[in-house]
Length: 111
Length: 115
Image 1 (cartoon, chains in turn purple, yellow):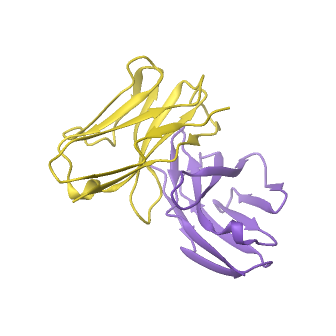
Image 2 (spheres, rainbow over the protein chains, first blue to last red):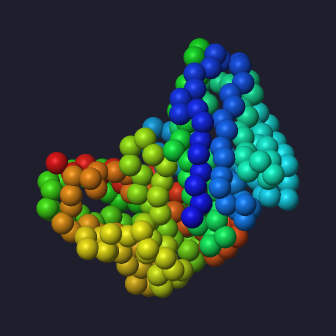
């Protein structure tokens, strides 16, 4: 089955700095990679996703890059703001269309 | 568009008791998922429904967990009897058809504490 590893587990950044979270996956057949943001007491919310036929995707301050050869993908948040503080999960969709999630990264933005 | 609804939001029970969670997916979504999220971990799939049929329940502990989606809309997940290790957030998600690359939309979850 698919195994998704996510690093770091915690990340503290100064407001205005960038944050980068990295994930690796094991199944080369995986071709859809969403990122979810989970705030305290809430369910995960999709913030950006990327498909395997694309190397990079950007949405305002958030970008995701995918390296299929190395089987890793990353989330980049620029100009971080206090409301970016949350737990972020990466996921990879297996050939059976099931999502395998990373263990999550707790991001804290210091004012 | 209304999101995925779940109830209750919180539940505290003693071990060996039973508990049930309810989920109403986004209108028109054929696929419904139940996930278990243990503290400090990512969500893990328990069961997937396509309309009123089970697609995958390979990770569901069937000796104590059961789920149904009788009319192909809302769904109930039950635990009987509960164990301490069942303490977790139970997330319901839905997607349009469960196909490749489809977005899964999550509800707020039910936080279960088993004492």
